[in-house]
Image 1 (cartoon, rainbow, N blue to C red):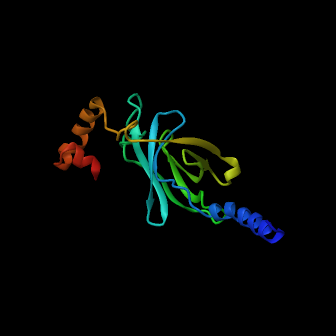
Image 2: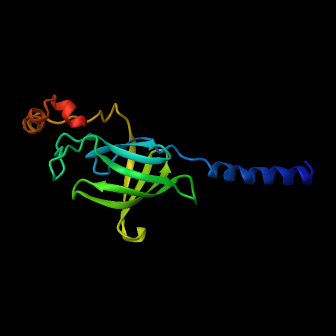
Image 3: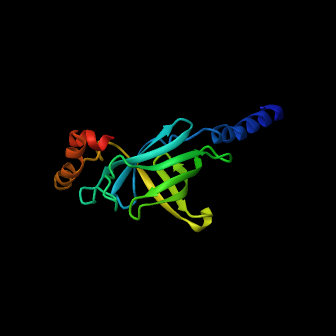
Length: 171
C-alpha cells in the first residue's frame, strides 16, 4: 500500500467517530428511577421531550401531597436538543412529586440504557443528578391506583362529575 492510500485510509477512519457524534440517541421509552419506586415514560412532544409517570411501586403512595393521582402525571416538560451534543436535552422542567415542586432540568443520554437527569434551581452546577435505567413495560406495567385509594377518590371525584372513576381521572 502506498503512502497516499495509507493516508486516505487513516483520514477516513478518523472521520467515522465524527459522523456518529452527530447522531441522536433514542431517549424515548420507559426509564426506571434509581430507587426503583417509579418509571417515567419519555416521549417526543412535538420538537420537545416530555415524560410522565407510567409505573409506581405498589408500596408508593399514588397521590401527591395535594391528593392528585401521580399515575400519568407529567414530570418532564419542554426539553430541547442541546446545541453542543445530540445526546443532551436542556431547558426543561422537572416536577418532583415528593415536594410538589418544579425545577429546571437537563437530560443526558449516557448510553442506550442510562439516562442522567439533572435538576436545579438557578445554575445547573448547584443541582443534583439522578440516574435512570431503561426498562420495559413487561417488567414495569402501566400503573394503576390501589383499591384503598380508588374507593376514597371514587367518593370524592365520580359522584360530583357524574362520570366513572376512570373517566374522572382521565380528565
